[in-house]
Structures are given as structure tokens and as C-alpha cells.
Image (cartoon, rainbow, N blue to C red):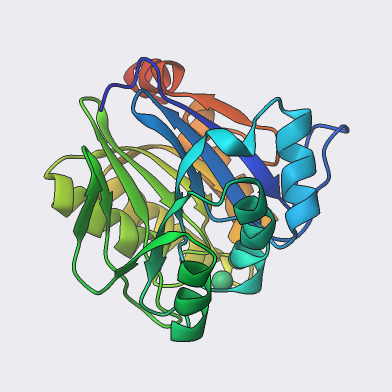
Length: 251
Ligand SMILES: [Zn+2]
Ligand SMILES: [Zn+2]
């Protein structure tokens, strides 16, 4: 997958630097690729998700694929509203999602693929890590010449473990890890250990969002410097620029 025309826009998050947008607990990120647009998770609230997308000039009808990291309310809540606008969506759900939810979504006309424990190719150059951990969660991974691009929801299995899995699926380093790193209840030594592990993968750039926590975000910024990219709803990551950032390095 080429990075030239790849872009990620955070459309739902509990942090924001943009007054036009509503910040609520949860996470969702739109990924533009040459093949079409992915929506990763859907935040906690449909009208807020669609309102943010609208203010960012993003049409829900242009989303081709929806990927759910794990079936927690703050990642799943916007899906109903998205499906109303776009019933032809193709969905990739983790096996931790309720079978009733899967049946209901199919009844609404959506195409649903349920992902199990194994790493799975879900498109050209696009992978799920497979579900792991408790609560069970999958990460979305794009294979690019500059390294893997990984999106995580809450990273309940551990963001460093998901990063290691993503890297081993592709057989290359990660260019970017973005999403909720779930370190908001972790103490300083615990956070430092996770950052060490991320560097060991290695992960070249990070964009901590959602449940990463203020302390972890500050510690990542201190360690990664400019390679720690600002998250929050409205943040836009142009992959060609991220590649340049990774190349310039931070040391
Ligand atoms: Zn969450
Ligand atoms: Zn969660």
C-alpha cells in the first residue's frame, strides 16, 4: 500500500484541539487509501461521530470498510448511525463481538466478516492482527514500503504486544502506532516499560489518543520528540509527512 495518497483523520476522541468538533469518550479514525476509505471504530455516539465527520468534510457514504477493534460501547456506539447513512458497508468484527450483534448487522444488510485469533488478510496490504487478550481485541495494520501502520482501539492486550504482532505479520518495523494505548491507569515505571518495548519493535512514530492518558502522552512526547504526533479529534496524519518525520528521526 502506497503512503503517498494515504491519510488518517481522527473523527472521534475524548481530546481535541479543534473547537468546531465535539470531544467525547471513545475513538474513531478514518483512513483514506487509494483503494477506498476505512473507518476504524465508531466512538460512543452516532450523531457526534457524523457531526464531526460533517464538520471535517468527510462523507460517511465514502466509507467502504468498517473495522471494529473490540465491542466496547466507546468504540461501537456510532456504528448504527453510520449504517443508516451507508448500509452497504463491509464490516470486520472481532469474535469477541456478540453473535446477536453479528446477526442483527447482517439483517440490516451489512456484510460481516468475523475475525478469530489468527492474523488475517482483509484486503490488499491490509491485515487484522487477530484477536487476543482480555477483553479480546484486534488491531488494524496497513503494509506500506515505509513500514507497518497500526491502529489500536483501547489496546487492552497491551499496545507493545499488538505492535510486536503487527511487526511480525509484516516482517518489518512499524512506521506508526496510533490510537488508545490504555495507559491512563498505569504508573510511571509501567509506562516507561511499554515505551521501551515500543522502541524495541521498533515503532518509528506514535500518536497516542483516547485512553493513553496524560502522563503516558507526556512521557511518549519526551522520548519520541517530534515523532510523537498530536492526536485528538480533528487531527490529520498525512502519511507522506509521517514517513519524512520518521526519516528525520528524533535523536
Ligand atoms: Zn476505549
Ligand atoms: Zn475498551
